[in-house]
Image 1 (cartoon, rainbow, N blue to C red):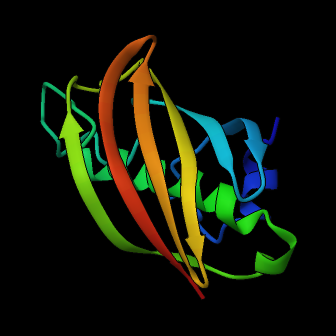
Image 2 (tube, rainbow, N blue to C red; image 1 turned 180 degrees about the vertical axis):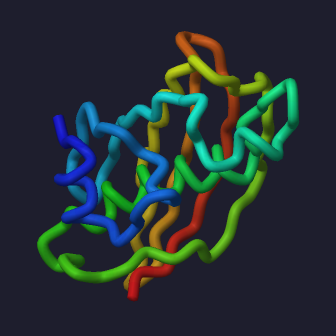
Length: 140
């Protein structure tokens, strides 16, 4: 298991934009499973939405992308590099994510072609699907 400090050694994201609390398992270049505890002190809570905080969908997608970046950038040849979003496809939101939820994200890298990687991603709360989609990364 990787804690936030170990995650920061792999990907460049920092608070308040590091959206992964721990990596439960990963295989470099293949897949990663990670969690985010959705807390009341998250930066987006006051504005999305006052009195009914719901984690923005774009942040759920970003959190999944950060998990994919852990899988990609943990390869020895990717050390010190950055994985940028190159595309997102077929993203669907199935459940609201709210304070107190633990978001479990799974990303499987489906293809690596040079500096471009593709992955299938899901985010769950418990066993309920919250979001799914296909991600594309450009590694620089």
